[in-house]
Amino acid sequence: MSEASAPRRLLGPWSASAIVVASMIGVGLFTTSGYALADLGTRPRVLFAWAVGGMVACFGALSYAAIGKRFPDSGGEYHYLAQMLHPFAGFLAGWISLLAGFTAPMAAAALGLQAYLAPSLGWSSEGRGLATAAILLACLQHGFQVRVGARLQNAIVGLKLLGLFGFLIYGATALKVPLAETGVSDTTEPFPVTAFAVSLVWISFAYSGWNATAYIAGEVRDPKRNLQRSLVGGCLLVTLLYLALNALFLYAAPVEAIAGQPDVAAIAAEHLGGPFLQTAVRMLIALALLTSISAMMMIGPRVYARMADDGLFPTYFQARNGNFRHAVFLQAGMALCVLYWSQLASLLGYIGFTLGLSTATTVFAMLLRRRREKDAWEIVGYPWIPLFFIASVLGSSAFLVLRSPTEAMWGFLTILSGIPIYLLMQRRRSV
Image (cartoon, rainbow, N blue to C red; front, side, top):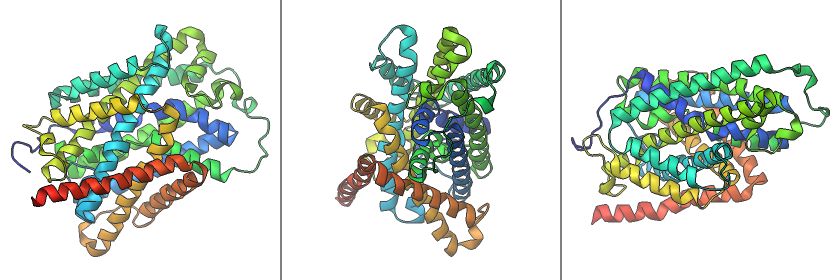
């Protein structure tokens, strides 16, 4: 890595944790429960799925913390797999990050922002104007100064958390119907294993971002200590918040009002406090989604710049004096293309499936490397926590292949499309 392109370690533990929280709290939180309730049928089953998803994410965070201690540099799965397996595996992981890791989730978050905020402004929720503006705003925020973008990110994340906790407290006091009286009448149906597994794939997208600090580890001060703090601490905080908020979403409104609906938070707010609270919650969620877009705009370009440093991506996208402007512009342009090409519901399963394969492969590579370098690794709960994470992710992905083969097909095509790109870049390097 050249001296001009080498990043400076400007991010402390709070900034790193804020990036994890901002990356995780996004469109999945505010849309997934409606779809999951339509499939699973009862509120307790949906909450159980959220609890399992949170445990899987925390186990993944613990595994990534061990990898980050061993390889404390930026790049995420691209850097990890290139070091632990082969540069080709790393490139495929970076290619997945480009398409399914940041571009598609950014478009999904922008679509969610449009769906939540547009009705409050009297605009169509089916449009793309607000979504486009959100992506361009994030591009301007992170296209120039790292320190300024990080400080603004911290401030907005703090405001978002205050708003979510405030809504949670108000909702808990305003919930008039006892929980025991709000259950679904038919709770004796057999447990839907396939539907539960597919719901876990959707929920895994809602939890995606638990590995955010791994992508910018080269800019974190004292990464061997702060990586684990930010990954595990941020993931635990978000898991608890997710469980509380989804319980409120699910029990604040009748089942028939929220099952299959994408804006469950707004529906719950209307039942709790009328149109005024619904508008306030829509604004809060728009802020939450805006910070999610901002976090992905900050993280994704670091991966592409690292790939460019290693000769696996055009050198035009290298960082210059700690600035990732060209890679940020690439990220924004691709997100806008996906924004105008896709629908929100179709993106959720595709993203969860594709990212799940990438993270499971990374943790599996860690276990392989650990067998050869026992003294160089500190893995919490070895080997059971990493193995549980891998089995959970791959099991849910297998069920999604059976239930939603189209979304799985796009995931496999994303991976396969990286092969000719890698061969082309290798040929350019040899020339």
